[in-house]
Length: 116
Image (cartoon, rainbow, N blue to C red):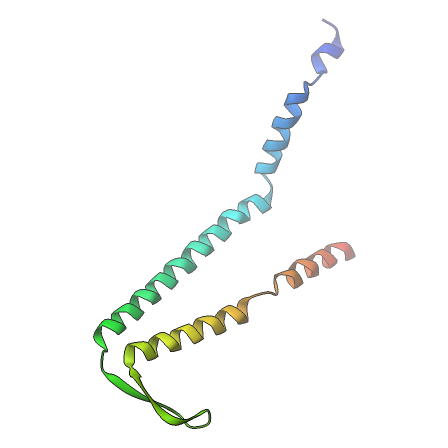
């Protein structure tokens, strides 16, 4: 056997090497961390919704809602509906406050690497 035939690599071996190299990238590991975060957020949201259901089951009486700067008349609604509305407004506000902003962090880290 000559030396060239021993060192020659088959094209299929390159595909296997690429797959192995991709498994070791830190970006791939971060995806599992993101799944953990998503799972935790989902569990917390389900627990909050369960709390909201329990509040709705136990607070059926009507309550008066007063907000003089915005609403001039008293609003009479079941307490559970009031809790739901307050929860929905809070959830939307939290979603709007945390949405976006992901691009700024990525571009800042790239520019820091470019300066090095």
